[in-house]
Amino acid sequence: MEASSQFASVRNLRIVLVGTQHPGNIGSAARAMKTMGLSSLVLVAPEKAPDRDTHAMAAGADDLVETAPIFATLAEAVADCRWVLGCTARSRRIQLEPLNPRDAARRATAAAVGGPVALVFGRERSGLDNVEMALCNAAVHIPSDPEFSSLNLAAAVQVLSYELRCAMLEGLPAAAIGDPAPRTPPADAQTATHAQLEGLFEHLAVTLEAIDFHKGRAPESALRKLRRLYLRANLDAAEVRLLHGILADSERMARLAGSHTTRDEIL
Ligand code: SAH
Image (cartoon, rainbow, N blue to C red; front, side):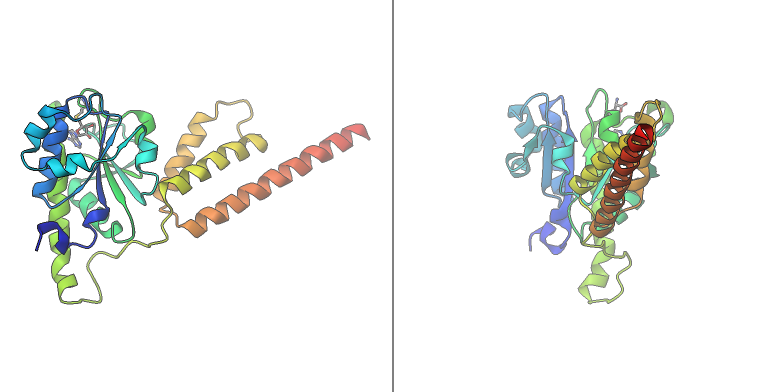
């Protein structure tokens, strides 16, 4: 049996490399993944397309590189994902729920039962930018020495891939003997996708303007906090629809209030 096929959730565990600068690192990351039975590699706007260096470093994991889709933005790469983890070398000033690799891997493998889950890795020089981190549900930090905290990109992929494999192996005996109560609860298959959440955030931004929530203040800070709140809440698709409904009614009431004001002013 092929190593990876023993785990049902493995095809839903996606490693996303954003803006990779050295093509060799793409190959090293693919090798790191394949040793741990992972196969789903996704690239976002690499600075240089995979080349000979990539294949030299892949050392037999070339299939992962060859089948890796390339997206222009992180939002597109994770649009269908139900949980997105941003891996960051910076332990401080993270505005997201912080997770260590072990807890992240356990939760990711559980969530992957219900749909695609992404672990996102940043650029060698600058990591992930704030906009990219804002797309993530939580942040993973490998507890490295704070004085020298940044691992090589492929080394970071190796640590997380290893933890994912351990998490899958932990779950295996229960699954193999048909245990009705697995240790990690399966993710709800209805969990909202990232594209659905982004649609909600756009609607929220429009509605907050319509009800004059910001009152002259810049909207970014409130929107950032609300985004964090809703990403943490692990909404399902029905809850997203409910919130859209509330927003639509708020807009309708704002329009009515606007027309009343106009009428009052006229009277
Ligand atoms: N100089 C960059 C580090 C980039 S290292 C910075 O300050 O952010 C390339 C990528 O490897 C990072 O974006 C991150 O995804 C991953 N990485 C490196 N060290 C890590 C660590 N200690 N914990 C989690 N991810 C790490």
